[in-house]
Length: 148
Image (cartoon, rainbow, N blue to C red; front, side, top):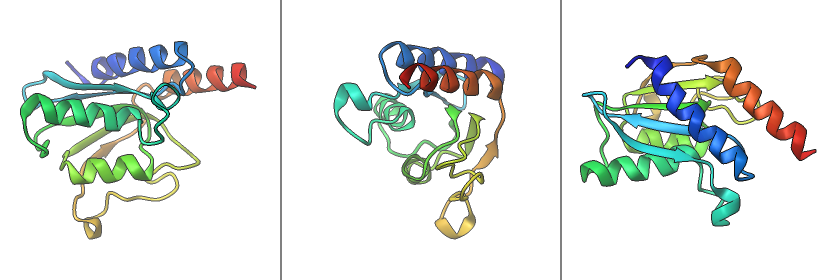
């Protein structure tokens, strides 16, 4: 599969989050062989947990799937640019490649607001932004339009 196809899975998870009243962010993690080993969507409202972001959920599942906290060789696909908390989790789990859809002009940590993926922070993954960005942004815009 290519980046667009993995992002399709993440977009489906984001849509599900929106249907459940959560901010529509979805995430999948693929291993070096291309198998999806982690999936996540925002669940802050459901869980009453501020840390229950899509990336955190996907990282937890991926670590459990392979039995290791190190996710070297994996790629994370997320519909919205990771926030500082999620960037920290990506750094700590050693994911070497980050692919995201829409930029986050409020808390984006891949360069939109700050860039936590610099060598001085101990881990510098390859970053690819803008993959299916219009679809990701549309989901967010529609969600917040309904919420207001």
